Image (cartoon, rainbow, N blue to C red; front, side, top):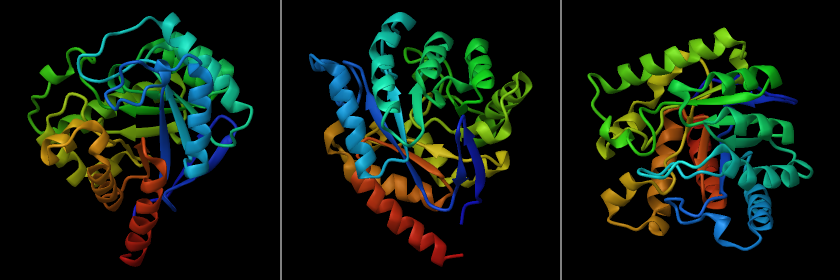
Length: 286
């Protein structure tokens, strides 16, 4: 059974590990790899808000709102454009949601606006080379932060998949990022670790990370993992993005068995049911 850690995100404070937590994904984008971006709708703010509420009803423990696609080869957008997409959604959601709202960004300016709007967590995909301004914002607001392992950016990351020792290299790079967070004033119980499935990783490396996920316990912090609809599932099953639910469930359940505290998903309801079964089995295996 995974260890239990105390976790804080501004005014939220609870234990992570007693059950698997689910982070629902809300993409306020036109070009998400998962084909679920709500920017295609005329009133995308309302569409994103309603989608997030449905995820909460389905069992989400966190909602993660992003305005820029991080798929391989995705084009970078300005902080101004990102802010225009996500801040209205966050403002509407924090008025009614009683769970932590996360901003999926690596830009300090966007993070500051999101925290001002009421977000409590920063999901930083470029956690191993984070902007100093972003880290300062997390410390100032006592917000939680996800440190995700990634090399390069969306355009270059799949050219940076050579590792001497996959898990040792990931751990070393995450350790440096963790130390940067602590030095800047972010508290240990505000930090979550994410190995970055699909970010500067080959399909085979993704499988190895899931299989060796328990090695990340060295950080003594909650582990988040996101396999939902990702390309390594499609490569194994020969399926398009919208056909990868079964592969998402299988990979998520195995990640739970290996110690994941939080799974980041598009399909909250079926994953919540799978997580309940996985949690029951792992409890009995103590």
